[in-house]
Length: 110
Image (cartoon, rainbow, N blue to C red):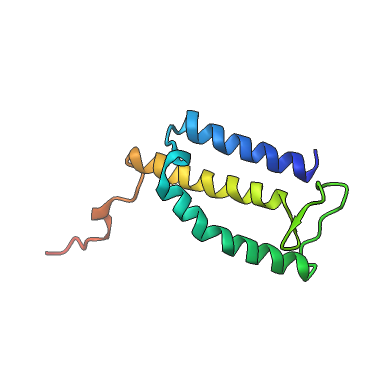
């Protein structure tokens, strides 16, 4: 399995998890797309810096070949999958009361 396959699989799993496992439907919400539009330029900048300085290198045989800001296009799919997955888990666990107890920081003294 090459990087392109992994990125496409991660993208598909993240979308399916959002819609059918977590049932968040983040992809249908303007708030998600606003958040992603804020994150995307930083992802592009980071990808450009890492790949243009040869800190991260990709085998030409492992990628499709299309590059965006010197990083493989697959990085956008993989980054999208990571952002969607993290936001999806955050909301999923938050709905189930998995967030930190707000009373845990209070002093027990009177």
